[in-house]
Length: 56
Image (cartoon, rainbow, N blue to C red; front, side, top):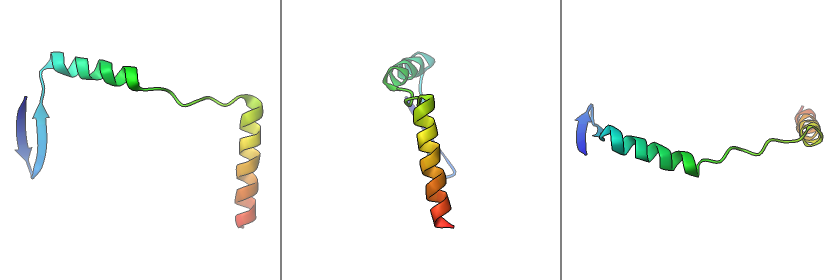
């Protein structure tokens, strides 16, 4: 691992193999956000519309 400093910013050079390992571990930890059902989405949008309407 090599560090570079360009315009007072630090950059790190990593071998491609290590970079791919880091990507794999990050991908395993990532979880998508929960998708709302149609009824949940409608209730959520109504709630947000009512909040927006109350502000005006």
